[in-house]
Length: 452
Image (cartoon, rainbow, N blue to C red; front, side, top):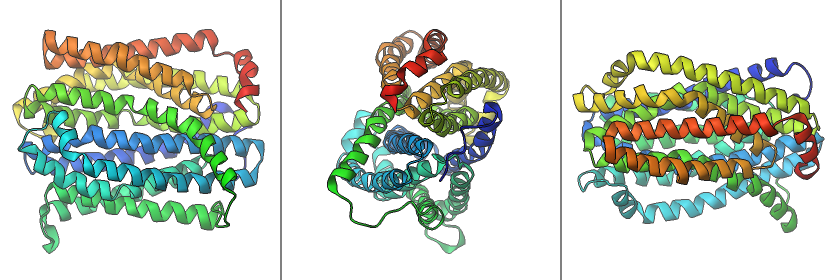
């Protein structure tokens, strides 16, 4: 791995990084949409049960993404500084750390399925279906976390094509296996919602093999010599110093979705199913901002490591304007076709009404949400996660939670969606004002001594 992102036009480099990631993120979203579509064919109860699992799956995925962000940030800065051995040490240590954390999370998850989902509002009828799904999903969790961390190490070098290809292969495997395992096509037993979880685990296992093989055989980044304990602990501290705050930042989405799911449960399974559809469609609509936020991390990390502060500031400005333009486009599009999108998954009128209401209201805030993504990714890449954590906690406890309960009390389902929209806009506006006031080259240069 070499530093490739510290020279050349900023805009074109961001474009080259982002385009492969768009396809990779599309593959991940297609993965989720395929699960949703096939499970929806089983019935509204199965779809509602899977919707209850979504926030929990996202929370655990956020932990994995936090580890990935910490890995990418530390490795990218080491690449920018030209320290090859440190890149190898950090790559290896990040994978061992992820294995340890996965073991703890799997044990906790399997022990708390019933009480956790009861707290989210799951009905007695939904709990057996949730158990069928989550028991398989938990046991295959290491196939999610380890390759995600491995792909983050690959992206740190500026290589977004290989991680995107790996994600695409996983999506293809999942889409092919879903009908076979859920409905019993091809003579296989029909496993229902459990089949969706099994398809997910098998497809993720393919990414595990591919990412580890690339890191070892192509990049030669995995060390098999026995290290000193102090060296390993130093690497873990570097990764967790960014990874833990990044995980906390990423938790805002699943916690918000968990809150909204519990509020939807008070309006019936149709509202929960509609919200589950809308949540997955929303992820599809945010592909471009998510891909850009994933791409800007390696760019910022390498340039920060090489002390190219002006390029960091330029990348931020370009990214902010792109997110605002993309959000406006999606809001107009969804405002016109939201009911048709919802009906493609489930024709039940109450389900369509719930999903269409979300997809009409919340997309008005997607531009601001994209700005938040870029802000978080940038400061995590700088090794300075505190601004992102501050923003996340403020958004959750000062805006999302109180506004959601107020909206539900005053206006029901639509009030909850309006609250989500207002929260996104308020935080995005705050981030933009913060950057306009403090995000100049002089500020970055003054802070560089503590970040490197």
